[in-house]
Image 1 (tube, rainbow, N blue to C red):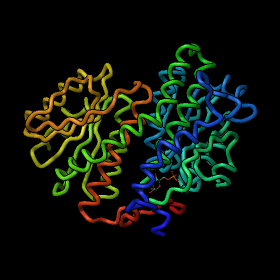
Image 2: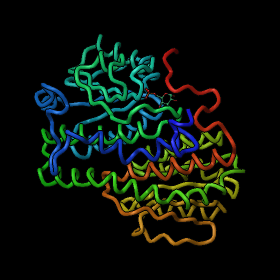
Image 3: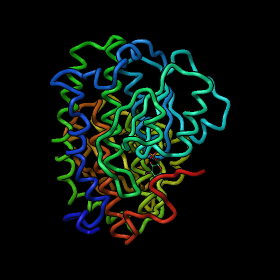
Image 4: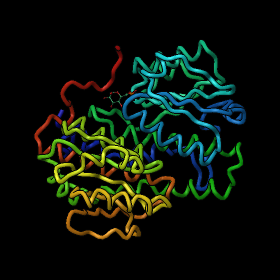
Length: 368
Ligand code: G6P
C-alpha cells in the first residue's frame, strides 16, 4: 500500500501531483496543435453536435462543480443554453427537457446512484443523446450513454477528488470547443484556446511549485472553525470546489459564495475568526472583486487571495496574496484549482485527520 504512494505521504497528495501527467493523457489524440479532433468524441459526434440546441448537465459532488464551470464555457464559446443540476434534485422534481437536448452526465466512478437514476429517467422523457464524461471504463454510466469522453486520470484512491476533477474540466473544454465549432466559434479562437490547453501541464507544474508557500499559509486555518470562499464567474465553482475540499478533509466549515452576494448575507459573519479565500485571476471581473475584498478587510477579516501577478493586489496586514502564474482566462479555473487542493491538504495534515479516508464519506455513493 505505501509502495503505491511512492514518495508521497498520502494518496491525495500523489494524485494532486499526477495532474500534469493525467491532463496530458486526457488531451492525447483529442487535440492537434490548433484544433480539437471531433472524431475523437466518437462516431456520429459531428452530426450530433451540429444539432444540439441545449445542454443539460447532471452530476454530484465534485463532478457537479466541473459541470458548473463547463456551463460558463458552453454559453460563452458555443452560445448554447446550458443548465446544470445536482442529480439528487433533478431526479426528484418535475423537469422539462428542451428540444434537441444533449444530456451530459459527469461522474468519476460512473456508478453514482443518483446520476444513473437521473439519466434513466431522462431517457424515458426523451432527449437527443446522452454524453458521459467518466473515469471508469465499462461502468454503468459509460454503458448507458451514446457518446463517451473518458478522462484518463487513472485510479483515484483519495476520497476527496482531485485529478478526476481537473481531467473532467479538460474533457469538458474539449467537448465545448467541438460544440462551439458548429455554432460560430472562429478557427482563430479555437486555436487560441487549444494553445492554452496545451500549456496546462507546464502551468500546473508551476502551480505545484507553490506547495511550500501554501503549506505556510495553511497554518492560519488550523484553529479556525469557519471559512468563506469567494469567486466570480467561472471562478465561483472553483471556489465551491475549494470549499468542498476543505470541509471534506479538514472538517472546517467552508462556504462558497459568488463574490457579489457577499453583501447579501455572509458579510455579517466576517470577522478575524473567519478567513476568507478568494480566487481572482486578472480578468474583467477583478475590479469588482477588489471592492468586495475591501468590504471584508474593513470588517477585520483575514484575506487569502490567489491572484495573477498583474492583479496589483498588494500584500499588507490582513491580506495575504499568493501569486499564480498568468494563465488564459478560459483555462484559469483548471489552474486555480491546484492551490486550493494543496491548501485543504495541508490544513488536514496539520489537523491530523485521515486525509485519504475522511470520516462518514465514501469514494462512490452507489446506494441512496
Ligand atoms: C462522492 C465522492 C466525491 C464525488 C461524488 C460524485 O461524494 O466522495 O468525491 O465527487 O461522490 O462521484 P462521481 O463518481 O459520480 O463523480
